[in-house]
Image (cartoon, rainbow, N blue to C red; front, side, top):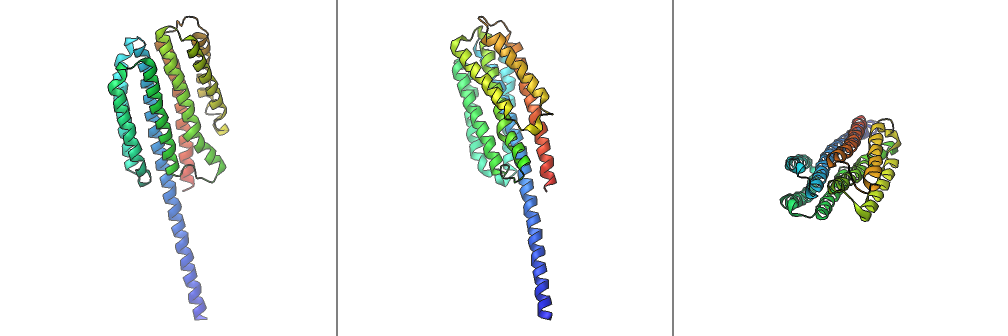
Length: 281
């Protein structure tokens, strides 16, 4: 009888230890995901300021010198965003493998910054867009390494997918429309090729809007309205115009308002995700 009781006691201790271990593992996993979400947010901030630099450079290289001071300011903001992202990845062991990729991004940015005023408008657009594409991939890698794509809850998985893929793609596509349209506004025309490219980007924006998590519909109303205002302006004053008469500053402002509204939606969705991750802790 004593042996049975002893064995039973040992079993209870083992089960308790396993239970505590599992709780600790879940807690660490939850903390890792929350840290990853924070790193993703810094990545979104970096993408945003590089997008702004692309649009400002487009106007400047197409002849609008009023954008020159803003370009210098934006370059300092990009440097600061890279520093913040670097500090975040250093603070989490799960993101340590991202440091080499971030170092490569930083080097490419330094090269672009040093040479941007010597580029043709098309070269500037291409190099900026390539850099942003790599930042988007970097954001996805951070999310994957942090386990943000491994959650079992379907609603949570949909929300995180929107944060990591859907909304960043929407923001970047609107960013391309801002940069391209601002350059054409500074130039005064866009030509047949420009019209085709802008029309394609406009359709992609519509597709991106349709793929956003339905649970964000209520808090995403403002972003959808601001994006539609931009698309209407793009169609009527850029694509359909024989001669573009809208000021580059005005077009840049409307496009920026659309992007800012999408970023507000991203931050609200990130807050929802963080609350749910805390609850799962």
